[in-house]
Length: 180
Image (cartoon, rainbow, N blue to C red; front, side, top):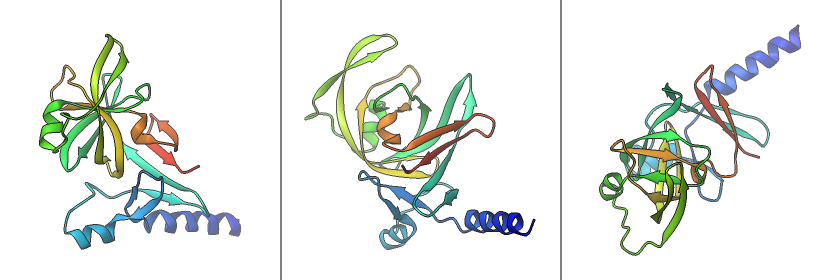
């Protein structure tokens, strides 16, 4: 009984001492609270929930369920956007309106073929400086610029989730990313 209480109190203290983290393109964790103070820019939209072990970190992204889709609020290079989580998409997809406001140029971008539910299309491939989903910021994210039927809506594809173990908990409306 005593060991169980110690373990429970340890987990509670680890959860309560969470700090905001950023996943970089190299899949390393960096404390962005310090960077935000240095640059004067707010990098997080809300508190981040982290539970860590000796070598692994677990980060949680909250989502809203609408019509069977997982909707996540985020930012692309500081510009607000709503994403639909699409684990079948290889890349993040952003509309041209967001790309313009986020300073993403498509003029020199190479075009790639995308196999969508509506057939094969061609879209410009770009590298986004930063993508924030709920409360997790990832830098240097590959994406395509593609307009969907809903304005200012993007797809949060696997180029955001990277090489992390991803778990979706539909009861809690949480996506968990864990380092491997």
